[in-house]
Amino acid sequence: MKNKFYTYIQNLQDQICKGLEDVDGTTKFREDLWERPEGGGGRTRVIENGAVFEKGGVNISAVHGKLPDSMQKLFNVGEADFFACGLSLVLHPKSPMVPTVHANWRYFEMYDTSTALSTGSRKVIQQWFGGGQDLTPYYLFEEDAKHFHQTCKTACDKHNPNFYPKYKKQCDAYFWNAHRNEARGIGGLFFDYCKATEEMSIENWFNFVTEVGNSFLEAYVPIVEKRKNVLYSDTNRTWQEIRRGRYVEFNLVHDKGTLFGLKTNGRIESILMSLPPHVQWVYDHHPEKGSEEEKLLKILEKPIDWI
Image (cartoon, helix red, strand yellow):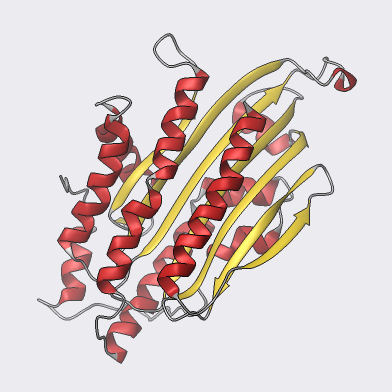
């Protein structure tokens, strides 16, 4: 399964990068190959200073080795070896009318350390999938929110009609800036620890996760195409940079993926590629009453049923 999923994310990275380069039309992704001293490595691709995308990354990695002490405590296990691979992307468009987007699809295995490494077939004691995709607009266009969520729901419904409401709710709960008491964005899907059960084999989970991964360009690109040429002002841009500050706060304070990367000696440049290049923190900032900026904040006060 680990080889099958890693092959999938390699191909998905190619597809997504090609789709985004076509949308931007002026620049290409820069690629860095890197190795992790403890085992594994990855392929980082970053796009910067394009006509549409100010900064973004579409990264894949496959890392393995001894499970760090901090992760042993998190998973409530003793010494173990692990393998983890995934694709993670964040795109920060130049225009404040185009939303930031984040997505991640990942697979994890844990092994019994008593199994000889030389056999090449260590006993898997735990395995699961995780992932999702979510949207963070700076100005709310309700039709965009509905399109993104409908695409997510369509992908989920092919596998289980309960998946969309369940994983939409988990997304709303996860991407919540508790210290601000507001959502990071308008959500999407978030799922984790998707393990084999009587109803869902690990192969079934693979099929579901790849369905969601394959839906990403369909969910995001039409929104970008619709909004990338909308005129905006310096005031709109300032608001975008203030809201980007909240995005940074979430990633550095709450995000499990960021923390996992830092605790497993991941590549810092790849982990922090999610941070936007231009951000503002304005003291005690409040938008004008009745403005489009205030409208967004009210939407972020509680989860919305977009479908």
